[in-house]
Image (cartoon, rainbow, N blue to C red; front, side):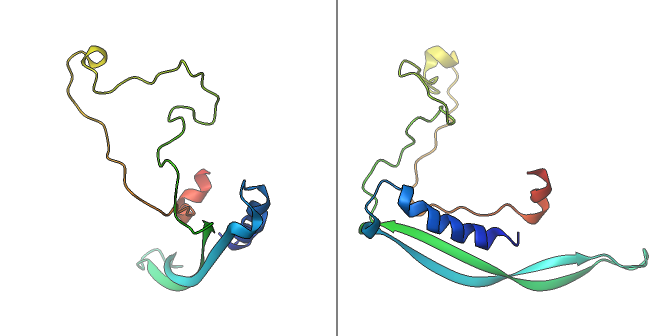
Length: 132
């Protein structure tokens, strides 16, 4: 987790030249802070209880704004089922609420889209880092 902030700063410097927008329209806002985290301290003696130690970790947040910062495009996914692959235009995903497809099932799996203007990426929790 210690390399996350330098990596984020490298990404901030590398992204503007490859984005399809004029350089003078790309701005970013940087916020810094700290968050308290707790570490388990294993006792030397097995009969003692676990102890917790609190420490502060640095936090860096960066928000890119292009132009006036207002979103002007479509908020929906371009190709929901593509997963990074090219999908032919003839491909149609199954319709969830279609009785012909679901054979009478009326369960709804749709979710209303939320009007969110911020995209937030965060690091996985430390305990999940070994799985990556």
